[in-house]
Length: 113
Image (tube, rainbow, N blue to C red):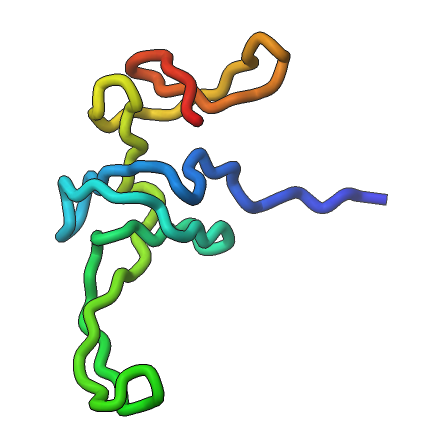
């Protein structure tokens, strides 16, 4: 019996991480990750990639109108912010003292919580 190969890549960014947008219209914007769409390889970043959505009147918006909201960004267009230096960094994985695999910032070697 053959086992199916996992086609989803291991993402190095999680919900709640502080990231910086490195490409696109919101380049240079920093924000927290609100949601990670694993199957699509995209993330929603707070305050980045804002789009205008036209809405009909409903219970929450009685007048309707245009609402500004975040759209998803591709995972390749964001980088994790180093907790030590505050600059964008790549992410590696290492075993800590308890033998557990943790994420590590490549620039400073600092563990990412």
